[in-house]
Length: 153
Image (tube, rainbow, N blue to C red; front, top):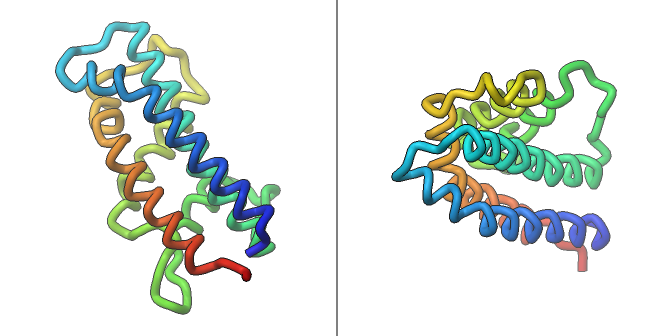
């Protein structure tokens, strides 16, 4: 893997780490308190930004492999599927047991891009918010594992 791409991926990982750390007080607060409209709206942006950040990293990886096709119809779904394709070494970029969870983040990303904050429902968002930090840690571990296996010396 090109060092420039690797540095961009590491930058995105660092950015997501910092973003999630800054979001954690609100996430933790909402684990024990029902959020109000303003907090729900902020949490929606956090969920949206999280998924976009993961997708940005996947796009960088696809570009490094010359496999990025942004003009493809439903390209967000195509990028999502790419995360879980089993490669010749019997691995996927992101572990298979996160597929359903990440599909829920993708669906939420689509919803929030095409709706109003007044349409948000805390009960539907709650598990995404509560699992965000743990989900990120697992995905970050998968990305780091990928980077270690794709180093050009």
